[in-house]
Image (cartoon, rainbow, N blue to C red; front, side, top):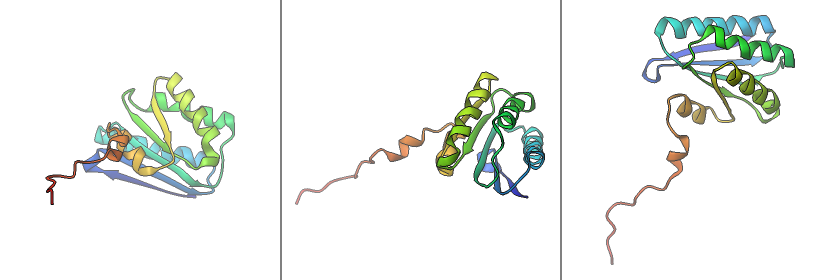
Length: 138
């Protein structure tokens, strides 16, 4: 069992990272700890990185995890889920269930993009070309 929970004041966001093999009970315990931290700090942003998680919850467990979010977190909480490409099927299901329950959950492959999204920033903006400044003709 291995997970880390990192509250970042300047982002008003809690970052949770899971790795290795974890049981559903361990995942729930870590989630409850992160949710409590969000509540105490009165923040509404969380990035959950499961890309290094080696155990995969069953479809039913995943539905339970996603639907339980609606009872634990305020409706305006932005939840970014960072996944590997082989976790996409489960991530799509979690996103769908969470949204049906009224939660704002989106999955990403990149933690930086997930962080920008939970902060409410459009991560595509950083890809726009910037003006070169004053050009001098020679």
